[in-house]
Amino acid sequence: MMDSNQPLHLGQPSRLPASPAEAVLDYVPNPRPGTTYLVRFAVPEFTSLCPVTGQPDFAHLVIDYVPGETIVESKSLKLFLGAFRNHAAFHEDCTVGIGERLFAEMGPSWLRIGGYWYPRGGIPIDVFWQSGAPPADLWLPDQGVPSYRGRG
Image 1 (spheres, rainbow, N blue to C red):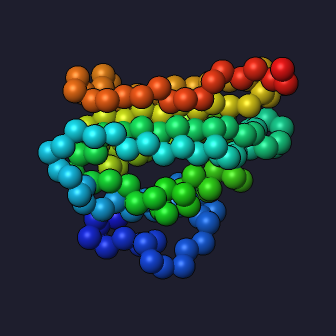
Image 2 (image 1 turned 90 degrees about the horizontal axis):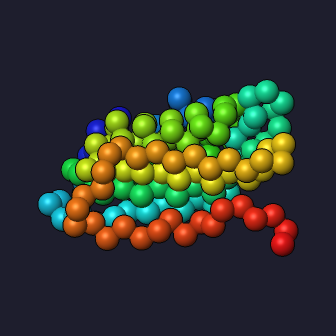
Image 3 (image 1 turned 45 degrees about the horizontal axis):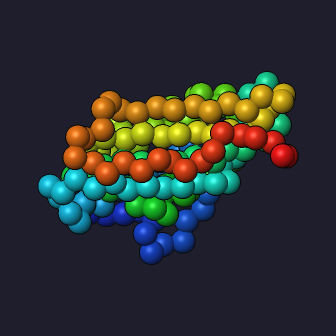
């Protein structure tokens, strides 16, 4: 985790990291500490590689979180997620790993991730992870991604 006072990427030219492990996520102070609110990132063009065939996999990710002391800086998140483009992992590993890393580093009050994966071998796979029960007073809209229906 970077020092929240010194973002590495914000306002700087940045290259796509070679791997998710090498990606540095920046966190900045929460502008509304003590307020329960939801932050949502929708990532409709997430890609990774199948660890068996090496073929590309595609997903629509939705990341929801309630900030604690910090928020994730969006450019660093984009670079982190882009680093999966050449990363070979199963859908479950990518989805849960992203959620766990953000939760461990950022320390939000609550976080969930929905991974809506496009079919591989004719079977779409959806993967969901959350850090626990959401705060009782949180407005929590549906993630808005319908189950895969194919062409029809």
